[in-house]
Each structure stands twice: as C-alpha cells, then as structure tokens.
Picture 1 (cartoon, rainbow, N blue to C red):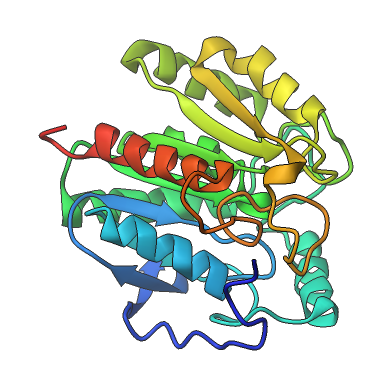
Picture 2 (cartoon, rainbow, N blue to C red):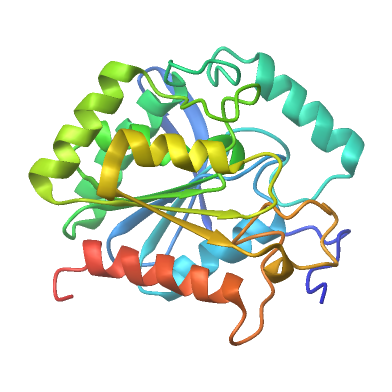
Length: 268
C-alpha cells in the first residue's frame, strides 16, 4: 500500500516559495492555489512528500494553501536518525514549548499573523488551519486571530510528557471557547485509537474543555497504512493515509476538505 517512495525528494516546484516576514521573524512559506486560505502546518520531521500531498489536495479543492516551513528539511522524508534530530531540536526550541501543559507555543503568534495576512490576500469568509502531531494544537490557538474560522487538529501530540495535557494557556483556551460559542464554531480533531503519541486522554481533555465545540473522531488502527515507515498508527491524513476509495483515512481527508469549503467559501 506504500504510494510514496521513502527516498523521493519533492521539489515543491508547483508552490510559490515566499520569504514572509511577520513580527520580526522571516520564514519560508509555500503558497499554491486560488480561493480562501488554509494554513497547513506540518508534522515532525517537516514538510515531507506526504504533507505536500495533503496540501495539494487542499489546493485542488479550490483553496489557497499557505504552508510555512517550521522545522526540518523541506520536501524529504528523512530516516529515523534525522527525524529524531529534528524532533530533539524542536523540543528544546523556545518557540514550541513541547513539554508545557498550560502554555501556548510562541510560534502561534507568528502563525496568527500569517493567517491575518492570508485572509487579506485571499478573501472568503475566513481562514482554515490544520496542525498535525507536533503542530496539532496550533490550529486551536490560532483561533485567537478573528479570521481563523475552520480549525482542524490532526493527532495533536503536545505536550509530549502529559497524555491529558493541553498545550494552550488557560486564559487563551477560555477566550477561544468563548469565541466558538459566540460565533457557533467548532474544531475537528482526528486520531487513531491506538496512537501512543496522541492518546484518548487528550481527546477527553479537549472534550471537557470545549464541550460540543470539540468534534473528536477516532479511527481504528486497522485503517492505518501498514506499509508506512512509522509502525505506530499516527498520521491520519499523511503517512498513514491509504489513498483508496472507501478507506477511513480518505473519508477523514474528504471531511476536512468539505469542512474547509463549508466554512470558507462564500457560496457554500
């Protein structure tokens, strides 16, 4: 079932490569498509060919992808050694606060600024955002930016040491919940049942904090691609997605794309 060669290097040539400076920090951002904006935030080890494939699905759904390079080497799926090195560097970075249960990652301030700029450029009813694994909870924190109206958390895995922890400041979480209730917004979230990085305790904590504004969906482990390099079922719409009609992971992908279009496109 493997559909991407692990040695494949994606040149990302069908994306516009921008150097975007916001809040005094410059990052490379890959942009493609037309229509309202969606911020696609990659998992560890970075913008792999699997993450890029998902971004292209978003683009092909009639949306504009903004995919910031946050860590790792763009376009490659590195071996375990390099992946672990990227993880270690991210974990000690002050931008991510990987082990803080009640603190938001400072990088989310830059991502909120990116969302605001993307909305000005692309229009529509708002901006979508999806975070994966290490960046999973970022989509929720980004709702402090008023343009973000379609957040998706795919296997949110921080804080790494506390399965029931929420990597967001309690004051910010309360503000996000209040906004969701006032504007009738929800957040979608996905995980595999046996995921050891994003466990049931985390979804339970989000559900307790956000009530019915949190829509958590759990896929059976049997739905994960058995040929993926990572044997633990984890990456719902990237590494462990089985790109075949009727597969639960494809259904999850299509739900996310429909969610984005329904929230962002003016005539939906």
